[in-house]
Length: 174
Ligand SMILES: [Zn+2]
Image (cartoon, rainbow, N blue to C red; front, side, top):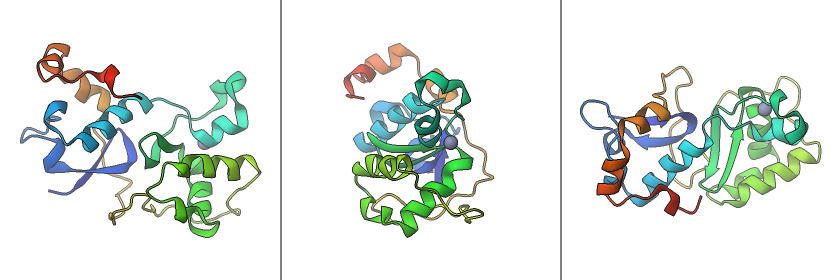
């Protein structure tokens, strides 16, 4: 059993912690609070625009933003990125001091400030390798791996089941 992404590439979960033997998502109420918060947080970020695109286009041209596929950072301090802008983030993280925000929710604001100020990766910057924005050392994900969609997984959990477990999604301060 290894580490898996759910929904968006970036955050990694212990496969055996979040999925049962049938490959279904475990009931949220049985998960570690930190894991549960991340999964619930992911569910709110699915389909959101890339942060960098959003900084360029804004609300008025939101249809020009790419949907985010990648998440870096910590819950409530995430950077959401499309594949096109991942290189900018990786460049900032590695070469422009972004690394000092690893494990810190300030990562989001710091990257936004740099990008908004015109910060970009140089043309052709190799941004394929994943960097670890968690405090823990986690291996790079395989970008070709199939991701189960979180929406499908959450649909499997009916509201009653969530109620039984005392999980109130509106209670997580998102
Ligand atoms: Zn983008």
